[in-house]
Length: 132
Image 1 (cartoon, rainbow, N blue to C red):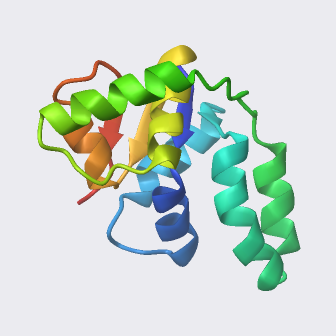
Image 2 (image 1 turned 90 degrees about the vertical axis):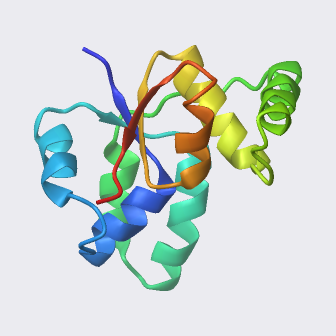
């Protein structure tokens, strides 16, 4: 079974109950125990949740299967060079680390971030665009 890494952008919309994503798809991944998370995504989500005193939600996020991040900086540089060659500018290092994590662990990435949709055109990785 391929695990699904849900990007920060999707988690935020999911928690808000936003209609910009299809929550049924996320619920299906959760019900099938397919989701995973990494420390980068947790570090983007948890501070705001702590500030809002959403401790139950933090506990749930911390209970999700965590995928380790091993950063290969040369590969990050190569991804950025590829992006620039294809006219994709302003991809942040956190997104490139997430991309590397997805590729290295053969995960599927669920995101609404336009950069991932652009990178999918010329970098091979499993991607589910959640924009409606």
